[in-house]
Image 1 (cartoon, rainbow, N blue to C red):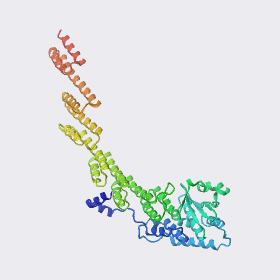
Image 2 (image 1 turned 60 degrees about the vertical axis):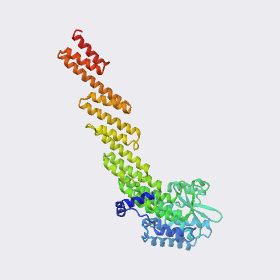
Image 3 (image 1 turned 120 degrees about the vertical axis):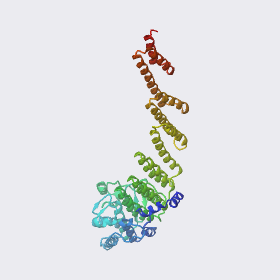
Image 4 (image 1 turned 135 degrees about the horizontal axis):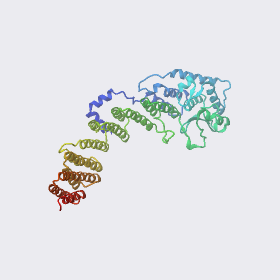
Length: 494
């Protein structure tokens, strides 16, 4: 696809100008993403690094392009965290035992900060400001405070939940941060009694390793971005989700994880999904041309031949189908031709065939003058490589019937019948042609009978007999005409 994009940019300057004028989401990650990726590439021993990264991920400015400065109240939030860490360290009853200290921090958080569980409130700055939290924001906050207290925390992710573990040196203890009774939940009856009512999640015990996966501190922070992306896309703000997806991939650029799964998807794949979702939103809103420009713009920075080809085909196909549905065949042809440089040969052939069939259908259905049917049939034969045989056969049958109808309207039933009979010799018969032939034959017989009846009613019996004998040369076994002959003979006394 790179070759196609470069070719398009060279051959179509208008596309370049349109790209320059178009307001698309930025594709450059925030420089802070790489800074935090480096700082958190090893288990952080300094809580401030994790706090700054979490506040950056929570900030509105995490959506900004490279070079954008400032945090969204980040300094003030960092001061609150620093004060909380200092308060814990200075507490006269702060335990020295790691296990007791870890539980103390959880209780401290719920007593002083965590006020109300909110499923979609994933931002750390919002937690500090309002006390509203979910599993991710509370887990990140707990990890920061436990690091400040010299503990060894780790992250855990399930299909729809996150929590923390504490390594005391002798054991690894789960900490369900959404609940004040969440320390070592597998061994606490109080926790099980109230857990479901607080969060709605089912706790996954440590022994059930298939349903939980350990994640690193930067991966836990990245869940803030993941949840913000999900929230934005839920509100149809797909443009806002794009830079967050790009920043999330950059934040995890130092991650050594290779076992991506349904719990923790490959960040590059997840980022590409954001790009395609934004493009799909353009198509859904009828901005098919913008969607193609987006594919050129984003595909140059984040190439993926097969995926972008599928997307561009969808954009051109969607526009083409709408135009064909509105009977704007010429515009549909222009849309397909304009996308030729971007589409694969096979995809272009598919759309070209669809438009060509519509063009031929218009030509065939418009048959009303002599010679038009022959012209349509000639064109149908000439494009045998571009449309399926069944479609060609259907179009050909329609053209043949249209010409027969034209002849019939001029009362040339003999010509209509001869036309169909000759066509069946040339192209082969089918049910529609055979039915039409029978119908026209019935009309012709009726016409002959009426001619006979006019003469007979005038008592011109000899002329009537001559007329019907001539008619029987066309249809020697027709019962109606044979009956007319017998009637004429009786009238003549024969």
